[in-house]
Length: 259
Image (tube, rainbow, N blue to C red):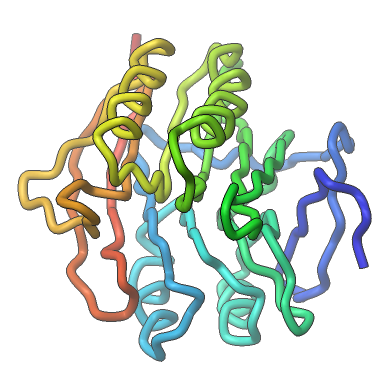
């Protein structure tokens, strides 16, 4: 259906899909952030395989400004959730099966001023993973909030493709002068991957969100899901324990840096 590599699919309350291309002009009338503090939810939703996944999203939809999903599939329950709650969802399909698109999805209350989509094929299984950068206006500020949502490649020998995927995102992030959130499922299950990830985020002065009770999904003893930030103050962070996915959601509250 869609031929261009860097398209993004946008779903809004009317549930009609829109194809958004790079450098497409977007008219934004409402800033995303109009108060000093706001919350985000970050969650790999396991392709919505478990029935109570949507119920968890409903519990937090009014408490968050942003919901960053990985393994989001454009099934009726998720699209109905977006429509019923009058949300805007930008989706980067990694692949399509039976007319259902799967990939990262960022759900918010307002349109981004610009966005960038990324796809990277898994070296072994050749099924792509996707990532998305969305940039949102902040009320009464010349700065904008950059939000990067990633599902990192998983099955690879060595870290060449992993490095390439992370590096593409960071090239955009390092040029941004406003606050930044980088979050998602990084599949950092090896020491080599984890060291590379921390090297990259430190190089652009991002800080990790730490959790006092850390029940993140782990593989080979290492957490897979992370939130990094810059130009914001961290208020609170918690992990929601649930069986609605094979990952637990990360709930983080930030406030705008007053400096």
